[in-house]
Length: 296
Ligand SMILES: Cc1cc2nc3c(=O)[nH]c(=O)nc-3n(C[C@H](O)[C@H](O)[C@H](O)COP(=O)(O)OP(=O)(O)OC[C@H]3O[C@@H](n4cnc5c(N)ncnc54)[C@H](O)[C@@H]3O)c2cc1C
Image 1: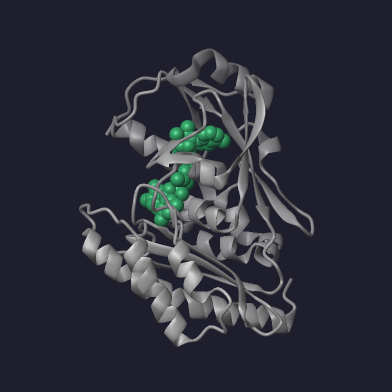
Image 2: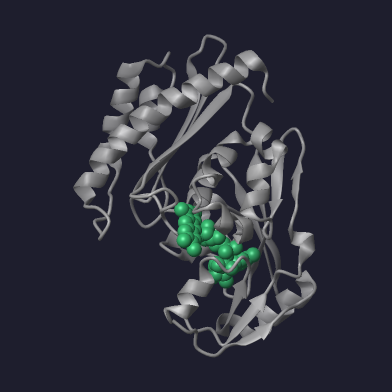
């Protein structure tokens, strides 16, 4: 399918891009990796007058880390994150998740900022960023602001970013040494978006009781969702298979999944119980291995 006509602009600096977006507002869309926006334009689901190509803004492609956090520039390719030893060591949940994003050729072009801004409810990156308590930075004509992930999404494919704001950075607190993580998802084929997915982290105290748990479901509703009741079932416990099964049942009860062409709400609820119950022991093993091996 051919895209409708649009004008193409390629700024060479962030300030130029911010000026352009300020002038054009919702008549323009940013082009990053193009892996989501170009299919949408080609299928004529969106018809921007202008495409502002930010691929010249090389200053937005970086991974920086210190002991406390990892900062990733919005234009960083998903493949660079996958290959980053720093990301693997400090925020392993992101490394675990990114391999599920489409296929390697998509990750070679697709950017972290593009995935976050696109806001697909079945996307892995926003879900793990929510689980990790990340925040994003956005720059617009009115300046720069920081937005915690839990405040970024209104509904599917709709963020609280203004039309003239550019997402510039994702900042992620490093996972503690005594924590482990896991991502599990059910898809029809390898590389497809999740019908149901879960991102899990477990943090253990010195007695191997759970002192922190995060469970985020994705692909189930209009936005990625924290599973608070399921988290509570393992908090403070020396976790066992019985706790994992209880967490799965709690997840199934608290989720309000959608029915669509891929699956019914009932099926999603049933699968959510299973993926939660299976992800938690993987996260537990990971926490024990990291504690024992001093991986970070
Ligand atoms: C076959 C296929 C399979 C895929 N499978 C998966 C999958 O399993 N999981 C998954 O998560 N994704 C999947 N994707 C999507 C992929 O991850 C995309 O790379 C990602 O969603 C968008 O990133 P992008 O850099 O390509 O953004 P683009 O397509 O360039 O842009 C996407 C949207 O974000 C906006 N945008 C981009 N950058 C910024 C910015 N810095 N600030 C503000 N707005 C911005 C654009 O204007 C546009 O609206 C798949 C894509 C394809 C084609």
